[in-house]
Image (cartoon, rainbow, N blue to C red; front, side):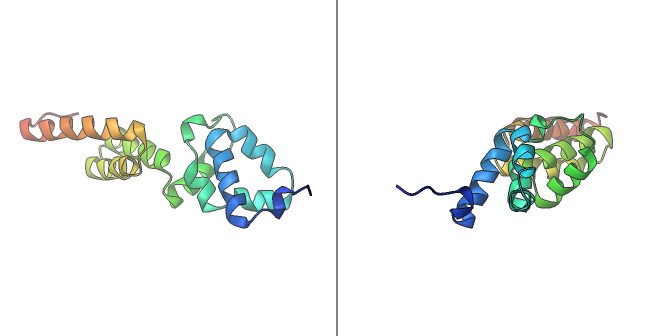
Length: 133
Protein backbone atom coordinates (compact mmCIF):
# COMPACT_ATOMS: atom_id res chain seq x y z
CA UNK A 1 0.00 0.00 0.00
CA UNK A 2 1.42 3.37 -1.02
CA UNK A 3 1.95 6.03 1.62
CA UNK A 4 -0.10 9.18 1.47
CA UNK A 5 0.99 12.47 2.99
CA UNK A 6 -1.30 15.05 4.51
CA UNK A 7 -0.79 17.36 1.54
CA UNK A 8 -1.96 14.60 -0.82
CA UNK A 9 -5.44 14.79 0.73
CA UNK A 10 -8.06 17.02 -0.86
CA UNK A 11 -8.12 20.62 0.33
CA UNK A 12 -11.56 20.14 1.93
CA UNK A 13 -10.30 17.25 4.05
CA UNK A 14 -7.15 19.16 4.98
CA UNK A 15 -9.29 22.10 6.10
CA UNK A 16 -11.61 19.85 8.09
CA UNK A 17 -8.66 18.25 9.90
CA UNK A 18 -7.09 21.62 10.73
CA UNK A 19 -10.45 22.90 12.01
CA UNK A 20 -10.78 19.84 14.26
CA UNK A 21 -7.26 20.40 15.58
CA UNK A 22 -8.13 24.06 16.30
CA UNK A 23 -11.31 23.05 18.10
CA UNK A 24 -9.48 20.62 20.39
CA UNK A 25 -6.16 22.29 21.21
CA UNK A 26 -4.53 25.66 20.62
CA UNK A 27 -1.13 24.20 21.37
CA UNK A 28 -1.56 21.63 18.62
CA UNK A 29 -2.79 24.32 16.24
CA UNK A 30 0.29 26.45 16.92
CA UNK A 31 2.54 23.43 16.45
CA UNK A 32 0.80 22.67 13.17
CA UNK A 33 1.21 26.28 12.02
CA UNK A 34 4.93 26.17 12.73
CA UNK A 35 5.61 23.14 10.53
CA UNK A 36 5.48 24.78 7.09
CA UNK A 37 3.98 27.60 5.03
CA UNK A 38 1.14 25.49 3.69
CA UNK A 39 0.05 24.49 7.22
CA UNK A 40 0.21 28.12 8.32
CA UNK A 41 -1.99 29.08 5.36
CA UNK A 42 -4.48 26.32 6.25
CA UNK A 43 -4.55 27.48 9.88
CA UNK A 44 -5.23 31.11 8.95
CA UNK A 45 -8.57 30.54 7.24
CA UNK A 46 -11.95 31.79 8.49
CA UNK A 47 -13.12 28.19 9.04
CA UNK A 48 -10.40 27.69 11.63
CA UNK A 49 -11.08 30.99 13.41
CA UNK A 50 -14.78 30.24 13.56
CA UNK A 51 -14.27 26.74 14.96
CA UNK A 52 -12.34 27.14 18.18
CA UNK A 53 -13.50 27.90 21.69
CA UNK A 54 -11.75 30.91 23.17
CA UNK A 55 -12.20 29.56 26.69
CA UNK A 56 -9.56 26.97 25.80
CA UNK A 57 -7.10 29.64 24.60
CA UNK A 58 -4.02 30.38 26.72
CA UNK A 59 -4.51 34.08 27.48
CA UNK A 60 -0.91 34.65 28.52
CA UNK A 61 0.12 34.80 24.86
CA UNK A 62 0.28 38.38 23.67
CA UNK A 63 -2.15 37.89 20.80
CA UNK A 64 -5.43 38.32 22.68
CA UNK A 65 -6.76 41.40 20.88
CA UNK A 66 -5.70 40.23 17.43
CA UNK A 67 -7.23 36.83 18.02
CA UNK A 68 -10.48 38.28 19.37
CA UNK A 69 -10.81 40.61 16.40
CA UNK A 70 -10.25 37.86 13.82
CA UNK A 71 -12.63 35.48 15.59
CA UNK A 72 -15.29 38.19 15.93
CA UNK A 73 -14.97 39.07 12.25
CA UNK A 74 -15.74 35.48 11.18
CA UNK A 75 -18.58 35.05 13.69
CA UNK A 76 -16.92 32.69 16.17
CA UNK A 77 -19.66 31.73 18.68
CA UNK A 78 -17.44 31.94 21.77
CA UNK A 79 -16.27 35.42 20.75
CA UNK A 80 -19.84 36.55 20.14
CA UNK A 81 -20.75 35.25 23.60
CA UNK A 82 -17.81 37.00 25.30
CA UNK A 83 -18.58 40.29 23.56
CA UNK A 84 -22.30 39.93 24.27
CA UNK A 85 -21.71 39.48 27.99
CA UNK A 86 -19.24 42.36 27.99
CA UNK A 87 -21.66 44.67 26.16
CA UNK A 88 -24.64 43.72 28.32
CA UNK A 89 -23.08 43.72 31.79
CA UNK A 90 -19.97 45.90 31.60
CA UNK A 91 -20.93 48.52 29.03
CA UNK A 92 -24.70 48.60 29.76
CA UNK A 93 -25.43 48.22 26.03
CA UNK A 94 -28.27 45.81 26.67
CA UNK A 95 -29.80 45.45 23.21
CA UNK A 96 -26.45 44.90 21.49
CA UNK A 97 -25.32 42.49 24.19
CA UNK A 98 -28.49 40.43 23.94
CA UNK A 99 -28.21 40.35 20.14
CA UNK A 100 -24.64 39.02 20.32
CA UNK A 101 -25.55 36.40 22.93
CA UNK A 102 -28.49 35.34 20.75
CA UNK A 103 -26.22 34.91 17.71
CA UNK A 104 -23.89 32.73 19.80
CA UNK A 105 -26.83 30.72 21.15
CA UNK A 106 -28.26 30.28 17.65
CA UNK A 107 -24.87 28.91 16.57
CA UNK A 108 -25.25 26.22 19.25
CA UNK A 109 -22.74 27.55 21.78
CA UNK A 110 -23.88 25.93 25.05
CA UNK A 111 -22.73 28.65 27.44
CA UNK A 112 -24.60 31.22 25.39
CA UNK A 113 -27.81 29.18 25.36
CA UNK A 114 -28.15 29.29 29.14
CA UNK A 115 -26.82 32.81 29.62
CA UNK A 116 -29.02 34.25 26.89
CA UNK A 117 -32.16 32.58 28.23
CA UNK A 118 -31.56 33.71 31.81
CA UNK A 119 -30.39 37.20 30.86
CA UNK A 120 -33.37 37.72 28.60
CA UNK A 121 -35.75 36.59 31.33
CA UNK A 122 -34.11 38.85 33.93
CA UNK A 123 -33.84 41.76 31.51
CA UNK A 124 -37.55 41.46 30.69
CA UNK A 125 -38.38 41.47 34.41
CA UNK A 126 -36.01 44.37 34.94
CA UNK A 127 -37.63 46.44 32.18
CA UNK A 128 -41.13 45.75 33.53
CA UNK A 129 -40.27 46.75 37.10
CA UNK A 130 -37.75 49.58 36.37
CA UNK A 131 -34.91 47.82 38.17
CA UNK A 132 -31.32 48.58 37.23
CA UNK A 133 -28.85 45.75 36.66
